[in-house]
Length: 341
Ligand code: PHE
Image (cartoon, rainbow, N blue to C red; front, top):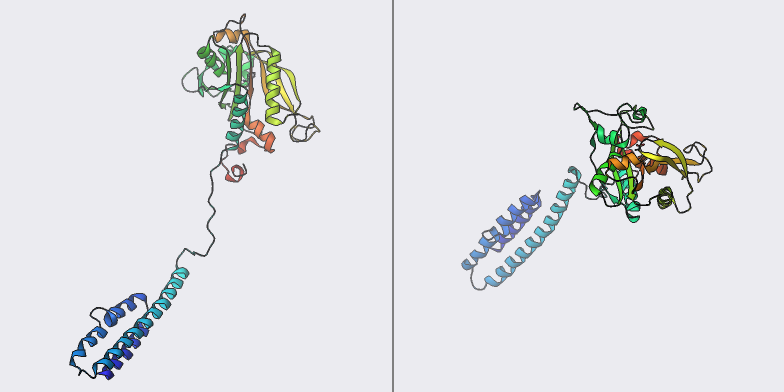
């Protein structure tokens, strides 16, 4: 019977070494060492032995069990690692590769510039007031002192809709009238940001759509000195504490007097470069004292109230700041451009 046991051991070991996969190995384990496996069945035969033979047989069968268990563990480890290697070689995922870079979303450069402008005007006590993109001719022009056949209409090439008198706003100035109607008779300090639309030839300098941030202050005793002081303060907060500014007389139908504000070129600090066309100055906004007719159209008596207004283009400001030489990049959705901000 000991010889039978040795045979069983030898056979089992041979079969074990033939197992080519962990699945085959499990099958082997059940057949050899399982609850009804061959080793177990052999154990049951101990009853046929004489009392003297039993201890030696028992010892031997325990040793066989042990050795087969050990051989099994060893083979299992070998097969597992071989299978893992095969999986790594065949599958698309190589767990040893470094991870893929996660792309983060980011704010559009125009949005970043807008938010900086909101923050500065917020610090100076101006609230954001929003008004609609689709406007009437009345609000976009007439109430702003630009009648039907006024030559100044040429300053704003307009997108019309199929509904007569309904247009896309060409500037944020119609928001001035909306704000005045809503706030009257309270004093006003608001900025009016939003998208504007112009039916223009698209070039490096001009787009069909662009943002503006309008500003409006209305109250008693507001003077041109307030306009100059407030806008100078804005420019210094936006472009640096020592930045020089200058005001040049200009014309807008809805302000009188009207001006444009230049800041010392932020790229060459006024020395002259191709961005400022070697003048040392760059224009950043239009402004003026609210025209008496416009105040009256907003419900404010121009003999009692006065105010100033301004309008700036955040994309133009971002172009200066980041040396962007073509405004078409802003709405071109090219990630190579957008990912730089
Ligand atoms: N609306 C003017 C423009 O689009 C800018 C402006 C706003 C000028 C307010 C003066 C006052 O060019």
